Image (tube, rainbow, N blue to C red; front, side):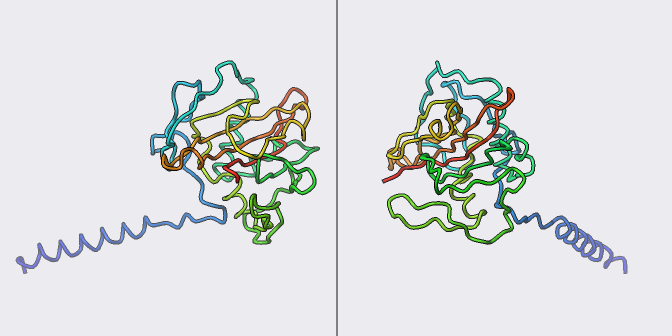
Amino acid sequence: MRRMTPLLSAAILALLLSGCGSASNKNGATDAPKAFPSAGSSLGIETTVNTGSESPAPTELVPSNTQTPDSSNVPDAKLETVAREVVEYLRERDLTSLTPLIDSELGLRFSPYPHINTQTDLVFQADALPDFKDTTKQLWGTYDGRGDPIELSFRDYFEQFVYNKDFGNAPNVSFNKIISKGNIVFNGTEAYPGASFVEFHYPGFDKSLEGTDWQSLILVFVSKNDEWKLAAIAHGQWAV
């Protein structure tokens, strides 16, 4: 009987370890699209204000090159703060926290490209934002170069035309100046006279594409009672 004791102990120990491993496997899936890791997470990513000298590493592919923003383009402190908040809430897919930052009169406009179309862009009031769980397809505009309708659920639209890259860690951030280059002209200050905007920009990921794979997230803000309120979210990428 004594000879069997070590074997019996080993078997019991293995069974206990197996049980612990399976108990720790919890289902963390949600109805929202998968969020990017938060800045300063266990991946070691740090979010910093781009002064033109350093660029934080993105969570996906490393950009093929970096651009230095105009050093004279000094941001308004309040504008920078609220822009960073918006990006963080978009990263976390937290529309509830985003709601108070949206202009209560203008609502929030979603533009799939930098050129805002005041006739066809979808606009939602702050208290009636779309739901990630809703599978209903809506018409968000037309695809550049093809002219096909952009008919997507809000979740699919968000993943393709809002936070398709980790813009919270974009190496280039510009205030009231577009640094991306493309054939579609940004007209945010025409659609919203007196507005300010912030562009979070990746200059590219694959060197062989020579920057044609750039991506941008453009946030348009209006000033209300000495506060900046989000009025539009536009997406930028290479267009034919």
